Image (cartoon, rainbow, N blue to C red; front, side, top):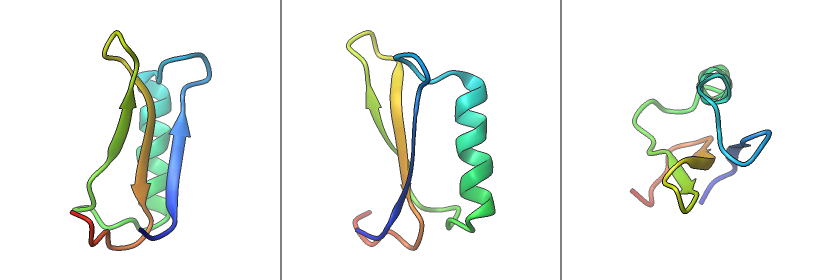
Amino acid sequence: MPATLRFTGEEKDLTLDELAAFVDEARKANVPGDNPIRAELSTSGKIKEVEVALAKDDDQ
């Protein structure tokens, strides 16, 4: 897998503002729009971490 952009929540879970910052950074890094986002969820189903490949992700 190519290099990735990864964000985690300041606390335990990612907030909407943190998710928006992740998307902004991915766009600035010219991440292909069709690359899938990987997420790690907490036991309560909330997003703890998101990650996307910086280049074309061939593991789709």
